[in-house]
View 1: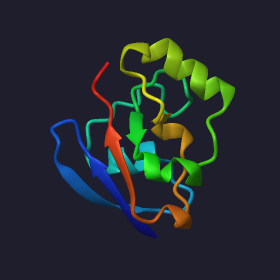
View 2: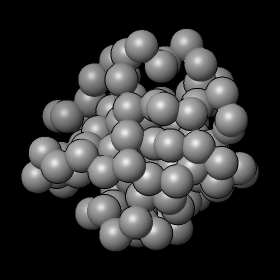
View 3: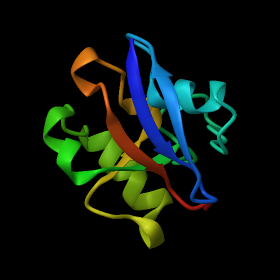
View 4: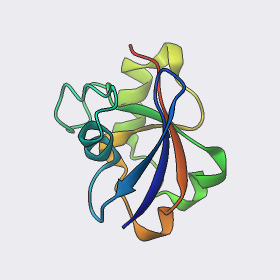
Length: 106
């Protein structure tokens, strides 16, 4: 277990507990942050869109082509180079202390 520093849509920072093998979407929802996850984590809707602090990007596995296509198709107007879908990023011990921001609502 470790810590995820998450900034919600209101700009408030939360220290969340990262659990091995849980997706960031699950962790954010469990903490009550405003992540809809309409597709239930199947990489279809981009309602778990988050921005990863750039200092942490190289510690994540790169997005799949499917994740990138979903982001481009569903969140193009708020897409950034550090955009990721929370359902596609899993908590790992080496991510202890990571900082993410929940993307604006679509």
